[in-house]
Amino acid sequence: MPVADNLKEIRANINAACKRSNRNAEDITIIGVTKYVTIERTLEAVGAGIKNLGENRLEGFQEKYNHFSDSVKWHFIGTLQSRKVKDVISEIDFIHSLDRKSLAKEIDKRSKRPIDCFIQVNVSEEESKHGVALGDVEFFISELKNYSNIRVIGLMTMAQHTDDENVLRQTFASLREKRDQIMLKDLSHAPCQYLSMGMSNDYEIAIEEGATHIRIGSKLVGSKNL
Ligand SMILES: *Cc1c(COP(=O)(O)O)cnc(C)c1O
Image 1 (cartoon, rainbow, N blue to C red):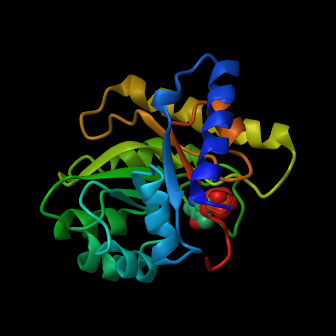
Image 2 (image 1 turned 90 degrees about the horizontal axis):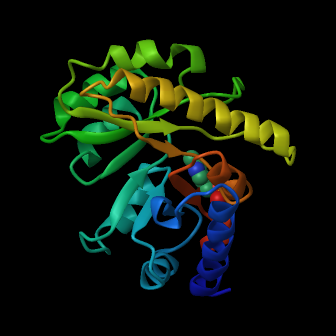
């Protein structure tokens, strides 16, 4: 399917989810996750109107980056090794996977400007997943206050791989509640107004529960090497 057709369907679903939850579709940013696909398919996505792209591996990001103008914003959504930070930090606009102090320290040291970061939270507490435990998020954020190049703009999570709507809803709602608690503290280094949650299979539920950034790969550009 052309990306434009997929995007049209996704936008209609976003509008419907916003209507159900009394939200504004303009408040939802679609991040096109292009980790499965080629540069050509990624260019097609940008041509269709996608302005934010996400990659989870540095190799994929570095291969694509130079093919796009500065008007495209790049979101790094995968595990970032500290020793690789220096290679890419000047090119990345958002990091969704900040989950440890050593990584924050390296970003702070290597970047020449403040970087907008989401704290990755392991809400479901699955052992296979990265992320700070829900109960440790506030302490973790307090530890980042002296890193002047880290700006915590929100929280990110990946929900369980399940079709159980209640489990998904509970996961997203827990992240939203945590975000609300942090926002109330009015921290200058952590405005924390955004929620990066929802992927191809669960973005509508995520929007109903407050997502501001949804990360869509397979339903937008496909999951085979197109
Ligand atoms: C791959 C990936 C996505 C997109 O997954 P789809 O199910 O293909 O939409 C979103 N977020 C992260 C962190 C990913 O690694």
